[in-house]
Length: 520
Image (tube, rainbow, N blue to C red; front, side):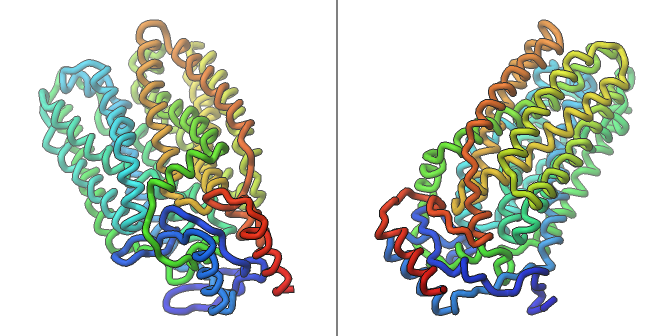
């Protein structure tokens, strides 16, 4: 290992870019580039046209065509701190719905109003995701992380002021602040993984970053029913128990905000991969966020993934929000076990996420893995649906675990698949759009499934989700697997890897051929 200024050279990396990666960098006419800061702390804007590509090529040539790629020790601390404050944000999302009957009695409101304490996360995300991803591209990773951690803490402290019956509007406002914090959190896993981690660990790093959010959901299923038992005859005791949960969350959130300020940096000293090194050679230019969005929506495989990801993740959000209602419908008085079933679902999904991340880093079979997990999630939901009312809680634990393993394990797959098929577009923008799709589907699915569950039965609501997931399977099968980032890291120059179309033989093919001939 070679150390330089706190940076550690990755094992298996020579510190130089192989010959295949020394060809002219890919042209890109939109968006800031990952890991490249513009003046004032933003990301570098892309080059545009043949003149800018020639400039980037000249920069590579001046550097000997072999920029260093190293891994930073700090990357693990960045990943750990992000995962922790993402955990707290997810905990605050689910803490109300898993105690829906408790909070409905405490605030004197309906179950639908309690459901809105979860759905506000989804509602806030949709209109704010474009400004948030613009901020991530224009002002960088560190500021976005601080906003997410800071708003998360602010929302937690506001909840401490809502500890009295009749203060539902205040707790809703506090939850809305946490929902805004989520906008600056959910899009970061793939950005952190790409900017800080090498090609042999990037999918695992993304899975771990997503795992933090899943672990928060798991703790949200487990801890609130233990801390806040249902005591409808003693409202003062209920308020005291809720205060323990709220104040504890606020203190932890505040500590994580200060840790974020200490640990987070914009990018490592050296790029961790060849794909990042290629992007960083592009000279700063005017930033075009609008063009980046347009290019993503012109990418048909990404649009198909956008819809299929929204269906799967929206279904997970709906099941998580309504799990308490589904369980207590068939197993009255089992609020604690409903939380434990949710815990089982999410913990199994965490295991699935890590296994899928490791598998992707090893095989790079993005489409195949995504499709298989999608099909198995569909089967898992069917089994869960038709065994929920059998009268055996142990069966619900097992089927919930199987469902969670595949449905929650799918989340990092979608992020990484999107980065691959949209490279060199901004990871934050593609991840943000995926999450926006998930929130939209989550709102619709939660409202419709909740209505079907209340008016008919949990089975009717779950079958509604099954039908949509089947549609998602078809859309996933239609996605063309073009692993653009992997090809660059492997030195495979795929001529389709560009943000804007350009099939001119003289402008694209000949420069690559000339570069290869010169290197030979």
